[in-house]
Image 1 (cartoon, rainbow, N blue to C red):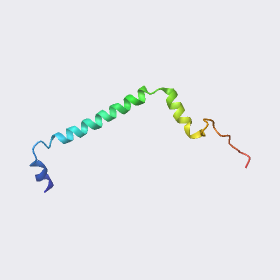
Image 2 (cartoon, rainbow, N blue to C red; image 1 turned 90 degrees about the vertical axis):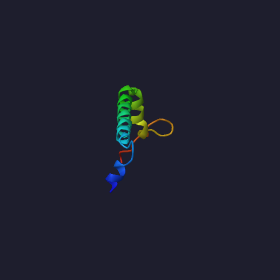
Image 3 (cartoon, one colour; image 1 turned 180 degrees about the vertical axis):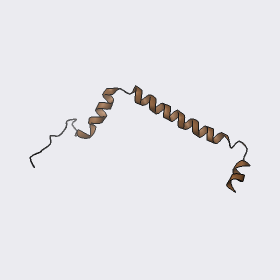
Image 4 (cartoon, helix red, strand yellow; image 1 turned 30 degrees about the horizontal axis):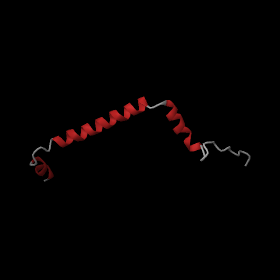
Length: 64
C-alpha cells in the first residue's frame, strides 16, 4: 500500500539522495573538525571535569 503511494509521487527519488548528501557532508565536516582542532583545546577539554570554578584541580584525600 505505502509502496504504491510513494511511487505515485513525482520526484520522490530525490529525497534519498538529499538525505545521503546531508549525512555525507556532516560526516566529512566532523572528520575535518577532528583533524583540524588544536591539540591544546583537546587537552583543556580533557582536564575540565577535574577543575573547580577557579580553574584548579581539587586535591584528593586518599586517607579515608
